[in-house]
Amino acid sequence: MTVAEQASSSCAEIAFRDTTKQYETRSQPAVDHLSFEIPPGEICVLIGPSGCGKTTALKLVNRLINLTSGDITIDGRSIQDLELTQLRRGIGYVFQQIGLFPHMTIQDNIGTVPRLLGWSKQEIRTRAGELLELVGLEPGTDLSRYPGEFSGGQQQRIGVARAMAVDPQIMLMDEPFGAIDPITRDRLQDDFLRLHREARKTIIFVTHDIDEAIKMGDRIAIMRDGHLLQWGTADEILAHPVDEFVANFVGADRGLKRLRVRTLRDLHLEPLGPGERAGETSVPITTSLLDVLSLMLSEGRDVLTVYDKDESHPIGTVRLEAITATLSPDATVISA
Amino acid sequence: MSAWPPIAAGGVVIPKFGKPSECVVQNHQFCAGWFIDHFSSRFLTPLLVHIELTAIAVGVGLPIAFAAALISRRYHWFERGFSLFAAFLYTFPALAFFELMVQVTGINKFTAEIALVSYTQLILFVNILTGLRAVPPDALEAARAMGLTHRQTLLRVELPLALPPIMAGIRIATVTIISLATVAAYIGAGGLGSLIFDAIGTGFKTEFIAAGGLAVVLALVADGGLVLLQRTLTPWTRRSVVR
Image 1: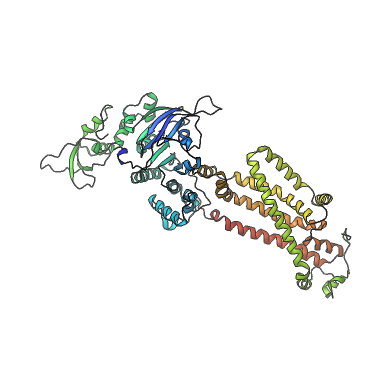
Image 2: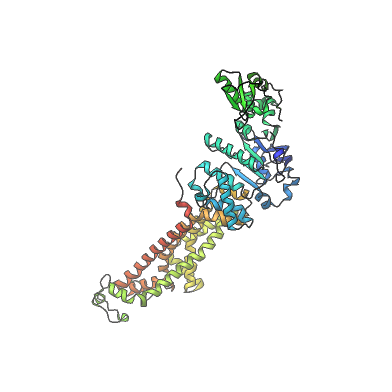
C-alpha cells in the first residue's frame, strides 16, 4: 500500500535538487549533489554508514546546517526564501538526544512553539493533553511533571508530541529511537506508524539500522560518502540492490527481509473450493509473509487458510510455493 | 577614625549611652539587656545601611558580570581580559583598595560601592559563565530547531538552566560582601562596620560583639533566603528520578 493515496492536501512535498554541503575544512562534500523528491505524506528514510551525510542532509532542511549549493524546496518554495524562524517553527524536529527542556513542565515543553505563535494558555493545555494521550501518556498527571521524572522511552514519546505541537506538515527525525532499548524501540516504532496513519506528515527519518529503515520507510535513500546510492521502496531495494555495497548493507538475508515487508494482501490467494472447510491452522490477511512462512515451517504444513482482517471469515488459502515464488527478484508485488 | 589602633579595654565609662547598667560599667563580654534596649536606636540604622550596601553591590555587580559573560561567549579575548581584571580586583587587599579609591572619588558611599561591586565580579562572572556553558547542548539544539531566536533561547532556556550555578555565585558574593562591607565603614560607608570601628575605639565589648554578631546573622539569613529563592526558582532540580 503506498501512501500517496492517503495523503491529505495539508502534507508538503520536499524536493532535494542537487543539494550540496561542502565544509571549507574538508576536501570531500558532506552531501554531494543529492536529488530526490519525497511525495507528500510519505516517510523517507535516509540510511547509510556513519559519516555518509545522512544527518547533514536532514539538518539542511530546517537550515540547522546551511547548504552550499543546489536547493531544497517545500511544495515548490525554496527554503532559502522562507524566514528562518518561520521555517523551523513549521517543521517538527525529533532527535536521538531528545532535547526536552529539563526546567519546563511537559505542558510547557510541548507548548514552546505554540506559545511563540501566540496561542492562549488554555489552547496550549488542551493541545498538550491531546498529544500526550496520542503518544500514550497520561494527560491528567503527566502535564505538570518535569522531563527528569520520565524514562528514556517516555521522554522520546514526549519529544515526538512536542514536535507535533503545531501539527507541522513536515517532521525531521534524526535517529529518534537510536538510544532506546530494542523492546521499547519496537513499541515506539509501531506507535509512531499508527500515529502516522492517523495524521499524515511528510517525514524524513534518519537511521543506521536497516531493519528500522525497512519497517518505517515508504521510501529509502541509501547514502554513502555524501552520495545517493539508491532510492526506492524497501521492496525494490531488497529485490534489486544496485551494487555490492548496497547488497551487503541490506544484508545477506534480504530475501527474508522482503518477506517481512509484505503481507498476504500482496499475494494472489487461491479461492476456497466449494464446501471446503477451513483448516485448523489459519492466519489473518494482515500477516507478514515472513510470519506465514515461519508458521508453515513450524506446523509442517504447506497450505494455510487465510481469514479477513477481523479473523471472522475465511477468504482463501495460501500455499508455500506462492511465498517462495515471491523471493525471486523479478516477482512483482501486486498491490504496488 | 581617631581611635585607631584600638585602645585596650578595661573599666571604660561610656557616657554617650545614658545611664549604664552594672554589666555595661563592668564592660562584660555581652550585655544582652543593653543590646535589646539600644537595638532600634543604635543598631537598626547601621543594619539597614549594611543591607543596602550589600544589595546595591550585588544588584549592580550582577548585570555587569552578566553582560561580561555574554560578551565573553562571543569574544574569547574578552573572557581572558575580564577574568584577569576581575581576579586582580578580587585579590587586591580590601583596605588598600578602599584607600586607593578615596583618592579618586572621595570618602563616601559611592566609593565604597565601587570597591564592593569590584569584589563581586570574579565570583559572579565565573559562575554565570560556567552556568551558561553547562546548559545541555541538546536543549540548545532543540531550541534552535524549534525556531527560537537568540534572545528567546537565552531568556527561556539558557538562563533558567544556568540558574543553579548563578545562584551559587550570588550566594557566595552576597556573603562575601556582607563581610567586606564592614571594612567599608573605614571610608565612611556606614553600616555595621562603623559600630565595630567605634567599639574598637572605645573598647566597649557588647557593642563590638553585637555589631559583629549582627553581620554574621545577616550573612546567614541572606544565604538562607537565597537558598529558598533558588529552590522556588528551580523546582525541576528536585523532581528528577534517578535513572
